[in-house]
Length: 181
Image (cartoon, rainbow, N blue to C red; front, side, top):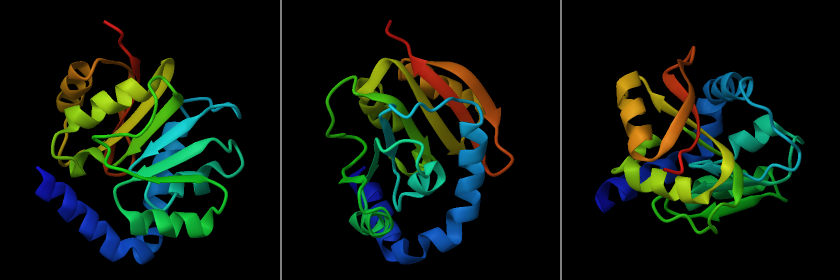
């Protein structure tokens, strides 16, 4: 399991300086689609799990200053920090998020789940970090995850799906909240 994580980290570290050039357009398309479905308040505290170079910060511009970008790749985060000097960049494994319980209003995890050996571990960490009234946004590659896969994964992680739909680009998207049962 650790081998997959470290392979993913090495792959992203090797391409960190080119990541935005390669993926900016497709990631912005995903953000446009998912954020058209939810409201963001200036006081929201947002966690971007697998946030890499801070493309969510590029997308959100000045909507909120409370965005924490968390990624396993230090070099990806360094690229983000070079663009966004005043934001929060945290190098951490998504299976071991270094945050207090119930701290974030919104947690975003875009096109990350396919890189995680055991998504349930990460989803438990996300569940723990999300406030009870918070919103969790997840996207996953449709070539690897079906609607039923996502429904089962979210149910096991104790999330209630508010909306599930296919994005115009390569992902399935989910908006969910915590199921406290």
